[in-house]
Amino acid sequence: MGEVDQAFIQSIEHRANLDTIEIEGIPLIDLSLSHTTDINLLVSEIGNACQNWGFFQVINHGVPLELLEKIKVAAKAFFDQPVEEKRKVKRDEVNAMGYHESEHTKNVRDWKEVFDFLINDPSFLPASPETEDNEIRTLSNLWPETPPQFREVCQTYAREVEKLGYKLLELISLSLGLPSNRLNGYFEDHTTMMRLNHYPPCPFPELALGVGRHKDAGALTIVAQDDIGGLQVRRKSDEVWVPVKPTPNALVINVGDTIQVWSNEAYESVEHRVVVNSERERFSIPVFFFPSHYVMVKPLEELVNEGSPPKYKPYNFGKFFVARNRSDYKKLEVQNIQISDFKII
Ligand code: OGA
Ligand code: NI
Image 1 (cartoon, rainbow, N blue to C red):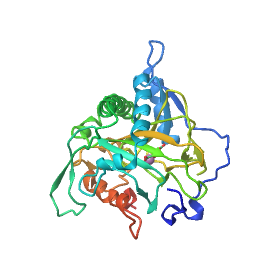
Image 2 (image 1 turned 45 degrees about the horizontal axis):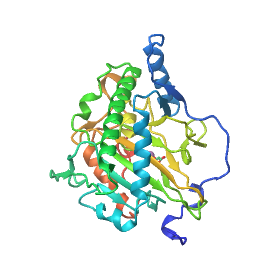
Image 3 (image 1 turned 135 degrees about the vertical axis):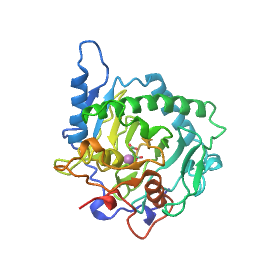
């Protein structure tokens, strides 16, 4: 990745400002419930964070800290291998899991390499975005033989984060005034994916991005990051790009498009991006909570009424997701499908 390859160059308005700025960051929420804390207090903290920011960090989240350390070590060990080794588990258009070194966001190449796997292996998604095509595709994981323990650490970590995901969905449901298990049914055959991200040092960090600005399509994303920093969130109040400060033992949570639709926009999915630097590599590990492919996503009935009509038409999660992911592999001529395409105006 040495020379300035035009595929990585962001248009001027999307380039990063690399000056360090000190501004109010996203909320930090302690999830531990001792007998002195009131669950209602926690629920309202979560609700406020979802409403005002769409992003927050959590501590005392229940994911064992030694596992958090182990997954970071495993990610580094995997990406440290020669590229020929990593390409043995390269993903392709049929099997979307595994190693990938040229992802695009909004048609500009990202300065990163990734390894993806499903928590539920196999998972099922539509074979194509076409509505008349009912074929379902089976997706399965591709595991490398090296480094040793890699698979085991990845799977153990993913299962722990899955538990946290359900806990957060429950807190979010409560914060919307709904029963705690209101969203669980949408995840029976969830297509949740975990990703290891490696952002190598970039010789032209003022021109490229690790991940271009985007919103996450799923329900929730739970991200572990190292101490380098680079993730930035577009603050809702003034649209300023705010850095997410690496915080020891914390996980970063963000609301995705699916929750924006379910909540009828009470909680919005917020744009974010990753800035790279010229000196140090960075690792991050997101888990993207995706519903079952057959779920029709629409504003929850309890949250709509005559005075507050639904803001979105129902859409099939799997079809939406497959259509959206087409742009990961190649540059498309136009911006890809977005939830705004289903907006009722
Ligand atoms: C993503 C993402 C953030 C990060 O992969 O969708 O936003 O810190 N990653 O790597
Ligand atoms: Ni993201």
